[in-house]
Amino acid sequence: MKIALIGYGKMGKMIEQIALDRGHEIVSIIDIDNQQDFDSVAFASADVAIEFTSPQAAYGNYLKAWAKGVKVVSGSTGWLKEHGDDVRKACSEEGKTLFWASNFSIGVAVFSAVNRYLANIMNRFAQYDVEMEETHHVHKLDHPSGTAITLAEEIVERLDRKEAWAEETTDPTLLRVDHIRRGEVAGIHTVRYDSEADCITITHDAHSRKGFALGAVLAAEYTLNHEGLLTTSDLFQF
Image (cartoon, rainbow, N blue to C red; front, side):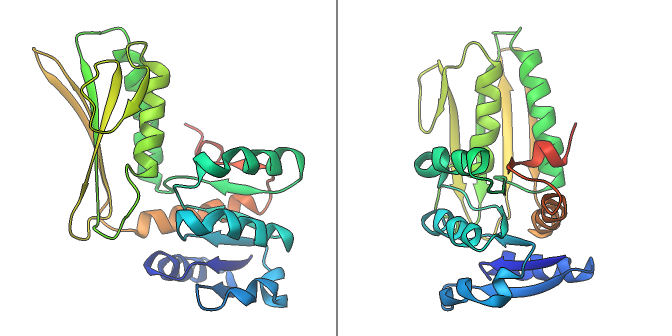
């Protein structure tokens, strides 16, 4: 498969190595200093572009890739609120393809499945309050993380006693989501159900970005033969 990389930071370089190890070809690498390469023959030859950039750049990158007939796999977060409707329309009505996930880790996919299952159970036990905490490296600017938002929405959808999620809240009808930024932490997400009697906690602790990078390449392999708006629930069917 021919892959283009959009964004060539630590994540992009790790994705490059894993893609090469799995027998794929990197035909184009686009970063902030060579945006003109979106118009290159090399970029247009890609089957899939893997995009990890910033919330401000992501949607524009999708448009540039789609204009060249290139499918996109993206792990960029922070753009959904402003451009989500436009992306859904492009994928459902205009024949575009985007595989988007807030987190591509296989472990997070399993963790998310456990999170949904546990929330369904805990809906019957109102004596347990629930809260979330996510920790990331100091370079991560958006908060809470896209993964935390996805996990929080899964909980709110299943707990009748929670109307929505919010940061720094004391409102018992809201799921509190806290964030911490320290060091070079790859990502820790914790969901905690607490009562007077006991506490139930589930945690995913990423040791490195390697799991995210592998998941992104697996997503690209899946996207090669699929269309529309795709996500990890399509790739990992638990």
